Amino acid sequence: MEIKKGDAVKIIAGKDKGQTGEVIRVLPKDNKIVVDGVNKVFKSVRPRSANEKGGIVEQPAPFDASNAMLICPACHEATRVSHADVDGRKVRICKHCGANIDEKAGKGKATAKKAARKAARKADDKE
Ligand SMILES: [Zn+2]
Image (tube, rainbow, N blue to C red; front, side, top):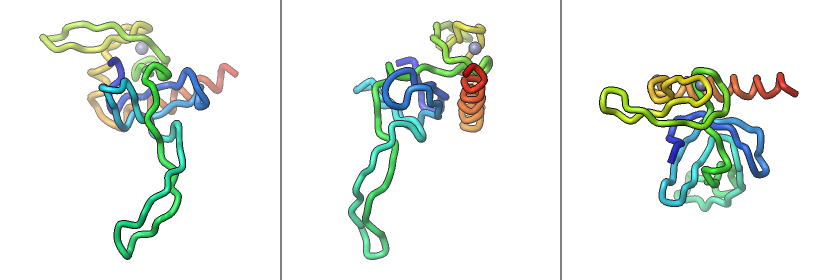
């Protein structure tokens, strides 16, 4: 699977098409991902203790990873990736600008969020 936890992705198919967000869970066995704020479903929750309230909560549900495209943290475009070996490590390379995606993503959560936001802004500009 090309997409990893912490990546910024753009949704390219389905009801949330065009949205961007950060990958918060990856289910490689099912080829599915969970993206923050995307594919939200209502779920009823049973109270587990006296202090906890039950009810309906909204939460992101897993969806097919092929419906999402990785957003490059360097050029902020939704992109396909190629693979390369850097110092014996397998890294993902942006086919758009040639940046080493895993190097950039290594800086953590803030970067993925930022990339998602920038990509969303770019998409707005095009409309
Ligand atoms: Zn790029």
